[in-house]
Image 1 (tube, rainbow, N blue to C red):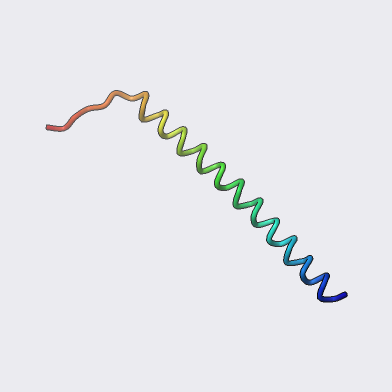
Image 2: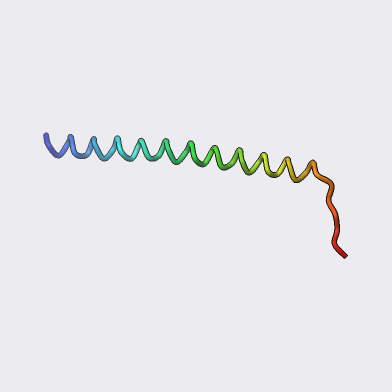
Length: 48
């Protein structure tokens, strides 16, 4: 019984951090996409 609760606790912890990581990854991807759009909108200059 105690072992089951301990395993369930680890499972819930893993689930929480997995969801947190997914949110952070999504946020970083959106930020990167925004930066790409921002750089594509600005005119490019070439340095001789």
